[in-house]
Image (tube, rainbow, N blue to C red; front, side):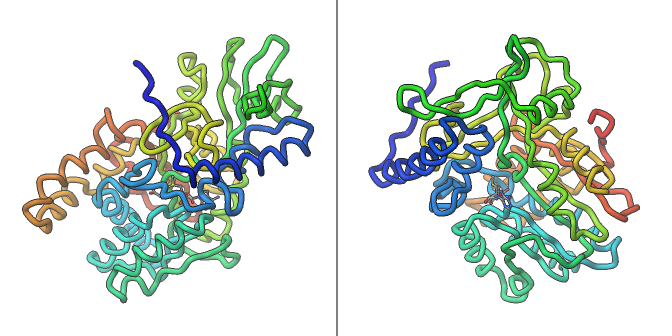
Length: 389
Ligand SMILES: C[S@@+](CC[C@H](N)C(=O)[O-])C[C@H]1O[C@@H](n2cnc3c(N)ncnc32)[C@H](O)[C@@H]1O
């Protein structure tokens, strides 16, 4: 396949990129000319006022860089609402904490569907690091009937006080910074960031003790030359966002695999991907601060992190199985019945992308982690692949 050329930047975008690169170069110089990749990814995505998620890029949706499941079809949020409603009912009521709510599309559908089912949460809180996405979410919630939007609150940090209910994160795990590594002749190498011909570039150096140990802890027998990623920040992140969950369930959805598949022999170049204006490519050193950087999720790491945080794995399955088990067909039929004739024919093709194996159905997974939550979850009734983790 001949790669498409990257979309050209506008003068404003080029100026923004130059500012982001200058910020990263300053830190690179101060650090002696080399940065761990996770630090580079953190700056490119989250440096205040500069990073992709911290500055004004449009990001999600048709006019942005990528489309997520809640953007694709309302059926996604409505199926999730079925599962969330069950959990809140089993707990005798509770609240929802959504992490990284993007455009707010999932919150809008969840709140609408839960209200229709007579199962509105006591409170719906959103923890969002991106100031402009927070504003976009506010605008989306403002378009809801006032009674529905009234229970929504935005948080700057993880709440300290305990609550019962659901923690929800769709496509947030893939946005956590990862370290890149390669198996060299003399051991593990860190694929960090330095300069080549005056430009930011991937530069290898022997891994420090922490990265060497983290690669060994994967328990995978890698061939020489194998390169991939791991996410050292995942366990502390998961522990922090679930810390206030006194009783209930964390539902995490994202693209990824169990570890054995993630680090399979065929995937020897890793899973890092960059998204710019709906084009996927593999160069993290272009469009710096203007493109999304993501890595697929090692769901075995998520399960381990959950256990370390005192949670129990309640289920792990594909997005297709999870949605089908939560009333996908019923929700699609209900949606179609309410759409005007010119939009109705588009509803099924969009929703089917959520479940088709060739689209999002198999690559995307859902894992449920519970605390003090004994009831079975409907989403894993069709197939539960927990044993593959
Ligand atoms: C790929 S987008 C997914 C958005 C949304 N959940 C969806 O499915 O459309 C990632 C989201 O996570 C947010 N985010 C990334 N890291 C975060 C963190 N550590 N805490 C809270 N939000 C975070 C981003 O700002 C963005 O809203």
